[in-house]
Length: 478
Ligand code: FAD
Ligand code: SF4
Ligand code: SF4
Image (cartoon, rainbow, N blue to C red; front, side, top):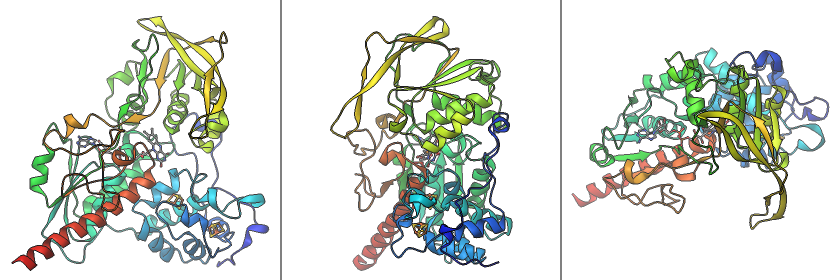
């Protein structure tokens, strides 16, 4: 039944049902269900249809949120889907894993006192309804174009660009060193946030739309970037950032001290049914272990929650600042705490202890000092306030830097920023090499899926402009 809008005063904010923490700890399935029809319409009807919608302004894709909420409340779901899909290549992914508390929902004007509109869950509901009804179609161009485009990296930035370019009629080839499509969506982010079937479903649609995927192809090893540049009218580099930041403390070289991505990839591969010897022999498996995770971002949250599900004896998260200064989403911290993770705030590892394998972590207490230039309080050591924690597995989740580009892209001379990311012209997203564009984490540094999608879309538009203007110049010269 169609709902009237502006119901936020008398209708409370609600999310889809969250599974009980004890049940969640036992499997890797997503923790939220999807809304039932009436519930989605009701929640959408809480929106006050702002003249200046701050939710939309703070969504990196500028999704037309008020309109698709209104259409959902009116039961016009096919139109709501068309509108959601017009600005987002993976609304089913963003609806699940965007940190909405920092983006659209965190900026909803009815936040104060009443609770924001549940935008992400409604977005997810719209798209899942569209999939269930067969409304989501493979990209189908109106006209085919003869030019081919090469995309390096099948993460969200590469996939969003691939779809946009295919819709424009280009012959699109995506090269990726992994054996599956999706980048961090497939091997980084765990199932309990994003089921792999959701990612594979989207990848299959892109393949059905004529995008050619060359999996298991590492650029720099199996083919050079220069060779690809000669093969295609334009190239997009969307290779993400994977070099784990290290920890400079004694004992860091012991067995069972592992980088977060190694640990998460093993768990995701296991879930996908792959043979993972290092998981089966216990090296990358937290079962029956005391686990210590170092770091306070989203990757650390994924590690602690994975360890819980693998049956760890205890899971502790060390973070050098306090709860209020966590870089990770507060929502994720809450889920982790519900599932039994213990946060040890204001601590850093001083040494990892053991002979051959880890036995314990010696921890130093910190306190927050005066704010630095960015306004954040700097953590300072509290002398003589150390203690020791039992540990059989230590997972380092301290962030990521770009790989050594000189090795990967040896036969080109792509300019880099001071942070080692690819330097692009902010307007055209073109690198220092004509016809080679870049998007996603490889440009921004470790960021979010929604920003990768945004960059991929912008890069596709810029590549189209580059190719068509070159073709027009060629015609004028002829
Ligand atoms: P990626 O997703 O990293 O994809 C890059 C692709 O390039 C990969 O498939 C890789 O195999 C390929 N590649 C790399 N080098 C080469 C090469 N030389 N040749 C061929 N292929 C190559 N964001 C959110 O919004 N919400 C979350 O909840 C969230 N959780 C996260 C959890 C974890 C554990 C991590 C690590 C990140 C998380 N993020 C999250 C961030 C998000 O996943 C990234 O910002 C996003 O995936 C970046 O997209 P991308 O396309 O730029 O790169
Ligand atoms: Fe919110 Fe992300 Fe959807 Fe934008 S894409 S509306 S930020 S959930
Ligand atoms: Fe609706 Fe909130 Fe967006 Fe306003 S800010 S249009 S109330 S969702």
